[in-house]
Amino acid sequence: MGQQTTFHAPHGGADFLGYRKRAGATEIVYDDGVARRMVWRVSGMATEARLSDALRAAVGSVRVVPSLYDELKKRAIAIERIAG
Image (cartoon, helix red, strand yellow):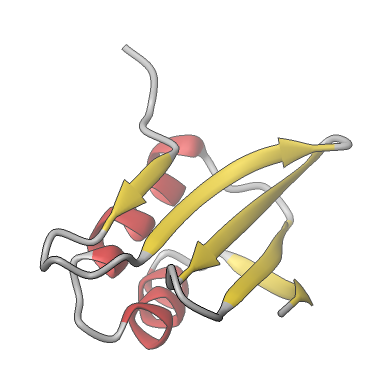
């Protein structure tokens, strides 16, 4: 069974987190469903399992983006913002 790549907020919000492969790089996408869309490129190697765990934990929080930064930091996953 593969890792989940998209996650929606369970608390009724429209928050969306996902990751995708684009041009050989892995990108994380956040969308609040209203006005904010952000994209980050994952620097270095991060396993799909670690990335999936971080996104799952972050999207369950009321403040998704700060939680995403915290979860990625815990797992030593480096990112660089490329849009948003």
